[in-house]
Image (cartoon, rainbow, N blue to C red; front, side, top):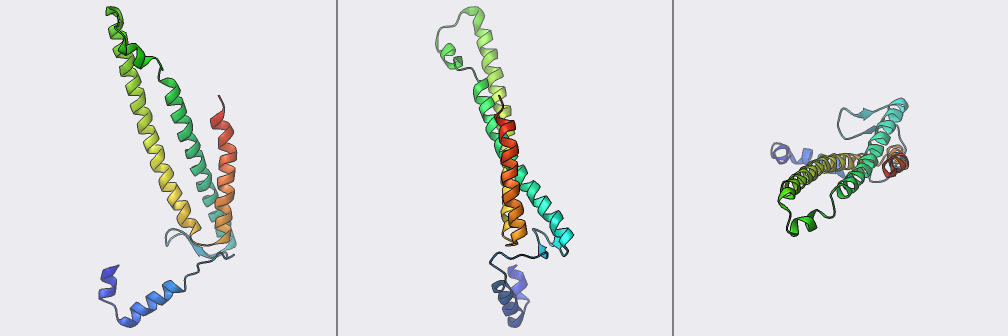
Length: 165
């Protein structure tokens, strides 16, 4: 971006700076908007409806990922035996040494796989969260309402599913 200004005239630079200042920084109702990328350029009411549905699904997916991370963490914590560390502190019998080691090995593998899964879910949640944030920064009211409804719908649908025992 800096190289662009090295080869531009002062008039081109001022025109660009003025265009940045004129960017709408308030919510507006319109069926014309550019979302995230130049190719996601909405010009028609049907395109706006489709874009709102896509954004609604993104926001719902964000909530589902958030709830699944919580459920995965809860399952991992409940799967680790509480007495594992206490058993390893006492003097084990000769036959139970191998069983304690295999139990610790299985527990550490399970913890590692859970940690990898949670890390991948976290990356997906962060990426989708930033995409949703950037979409809202278009300041289009229809898109903003799609994010709000998608977030509420995602939480409403995911909460009972992931909190079932």
